[in-house]
Image 1 (tube, rainbow, N blue to C red):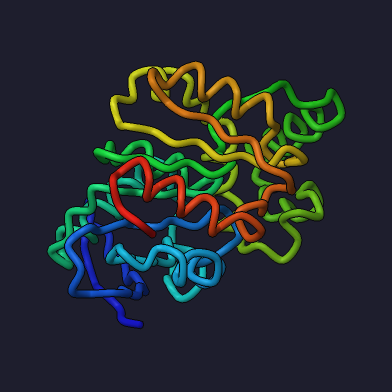
Image 2 (cartoon, rainbow, N blue to C red):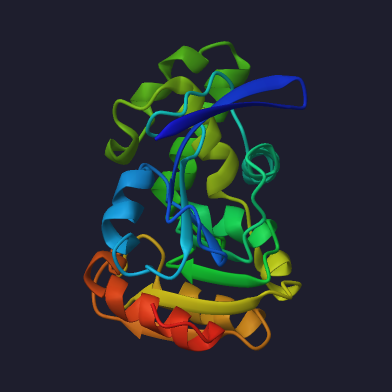
Length: 242
């Protein structure tokens, strides 16, 4: 593992990363989802993508990459792009899980692999929308420090910076971005995914022209069960044996 210090838009970032199979030509960047880190992706894919140089990163605010101010997904994409330039890597393949899939899509690689990707916004239940509206009102009145009272148990213990970042990214609708994606795209999805529904995956597949869609058994982290199959499909599509 290593750290790379970069600067983007007057902000400094320290990105923790690891490169496996450093000497191979085919290069893949692998991005984790919200609340995760590079270790879960490495655990799933490191042994199966043996024909690829694999770059695993902790996105800012996750794992061992710190963050001291809120971001949105475009910020994450800009940071990741600068990071790749700093380590002199230009991967033709980028894989992203959940939130990482949105970042991967914005990077516009030649080959895009999406795993239960976020980006299709659906209507929230009325009580959730009411809770958000009350919090926004209190924030305007100067009571934003009480945000933890309005956070769901999914964000319990999250720092205020990451909570603000989550609010920035959770309602970003990527329909237009998916529709304008020209990357050769493989989409894999957990049939029992309750974080990003199978219907969302089907929508993304329709929006990205020429994409291939693979529903698989499992929940949001289905790829832990199917990493070998996913790697095999990637290999067959790019003419490699993984």
